[in-house]
Length: 260
Image (cartoon, rainbow, N blue to C red; front, side):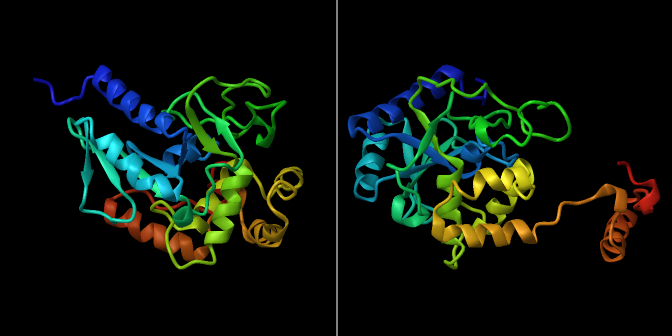
């Protein structure tokens, strides 16, 4: 028998999990690495779905999902964040994050997306594309669709401003956000959506809540995009050359030879 789980088994198991959410009239809103891939952020992601749940329903939803027998609770991790793994293939899992832990509200602004897994990084919320007219020019995120198209699916992600609000609030807390520190996620958003550029600032700053705008603007001001035409700094070049030497790779080129 093949070790790979058949697609229909995964589909049935996910369909059952979605039905549990529907039973409680609860949206299936994904954040974490899989969620931000629908927001144009090229984050490394495994087959784990980080789902935000109302704190009062977290345990009831977890019990409902495992009751069918297709999912089991992995008790090796943080007991405050239930991780439900597929019995047939534990690579697929769902983590249930209560609102008070991740700073997101299930009732906040959310965007429908085509499915649970973003196999390719795309930007669904097209209003934040850095260059929607000339979208193929340079390293810009791919748009899934033009603005105005809605998806009739049970899958949602937080809007980009809603997620940034939660991340900016969590920066004040000494804890990680769905594996990565919130400041890392903020930097990812700046990097992939070019938020440090003036025309992007004019979109994103008014969209976050007023008491977070100064903190976000500080992050935008601190961000330094790597300029290949200037090459690497001497310190970074020295570190990279040490790594390359140990691997038998060519040395880092001088600034004039770096590809533009």
